[in-house]
Each structure stands twice: as C-alpha cells, then as structure tokens.
Amino acid sequence: MDIDDNGAEGSEILIGSGDVAPEEQRVAYISSTDQKKRTRESSTEKSSNKKAKKSGGKKVSSMLKRLIEELLTDVPTPTAGENLEEANDNVVGIFLQLSNKIDSAESKNEDASQGLISSYFDFGGALFNRYKELKPTYGKEGSRALVKSEVRKEIPETKFSDDALKKRMERARKMFRIFNTIGKEKIARVKSIPPGFILNLTQDDIDYVIAKVLKPSSDKRE
Image (cartoon, rainbow, N blue to C red; front, side, top):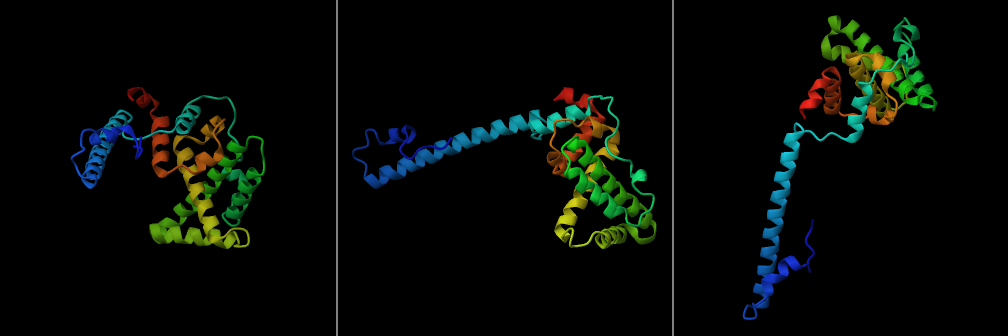
C-alpha cells in the first residue's frame, strides 16, 4: 500500500521538533517515510517469495488449473473434427485446405472450442509431417525454411499477411505439441475454456499443462 504524502505514518517525526529548521524537518520526514516504505516492500517481497516456493515457483491462474482439470476428466465424447488423413492424403494444397478449415471452425458457435482446437491441431500436424519429410535431406533449419515457403506459396498474402500467417502457424504448432503429447482424444474434454486462452498459452504454460496431465499425481504435492 502506498503512503499518502499527508498520511499519519510520517507525521510523528514532526512532533516535538519545534527547534528544528523546516527544511531539516522535511528531510527527516521524507527519510522516515522512505525507510518505512522500503521495510514494507522488503516484507512484501519475502512474502511473495514464500508463496512462490510453496507453489513450485510458478503462479498458476485459475483458468489454467481449470483447463488441466478438464483435460484430466474422462468423457465418452468422440474426438472433435476430422482426422488429418481424412482431410487430404496429398501434401499439395493441404496447408490451404487446413487453414480454411480453421476459418470455418472460427465462424461456428456450436462446439467452437473443440472444433477450432482440432482444426489447429490438424494444421500443426501437417506442418510437422512435412518438416519430417524434408529434414533428412535439408536438415533442421533448411526444412523449417522450406515448410514456411510452401505454406506461404499455398496461402496468398491477399488472404493472410506474413505476420498473420506466422501467428496461425505458431498457434497450430502449439496445439499439435500439446495434444500430440497428451493425446488428441483429450480435445473432446475441453468444455468451458475459451479457445483463445489455449491458443495463446506460453511455452512455459504448455510445458506445465503437459506435465500435469501426464503425471497428475504431482498436483497432490503442492
């Protein structure tokens, strides 16, 4: 809590100081106020550090906790969306087709979360599969550059700018990484979490979600 310039906490310095010059009174007041402020800031920092240690050094939002709970809840619902193989067996044109599938999912309200996540997952899967095909010949960096070039060639700038396409590809890779690791069938478990929240997870959050879903028993130790 900030101290009001006219607050009571510093005013006691002026009591009984009639023989002290006004300028010295002001300096003493400021010095006392700053000292108390530093003391409180130090106490607050120590308290925050203790809380961080108790939670493993990571602040976990309630939304992130809810996402993990939903991913750990069994549901009899089949996986949302089509399989990547059903979308197209050929590499040629698949990036545009799967990007259009994302656009279609974004325009729907019913099962929007599951459909949109599934569409991004399939797009990410296509990116990953093409990368694996190219890597033995062109290496890691060369394959990445070629995949990016192929996607750009299929999806014109009139549809997506370079920045917008980069963002879509990053989101697709995130969704593929999460659900390829924990199982695509878990997409059907996402019920109340807005898709935008999942699509914008940081890499640290993704690592945290994956770890908690793969080894849920670790939650009990926090």
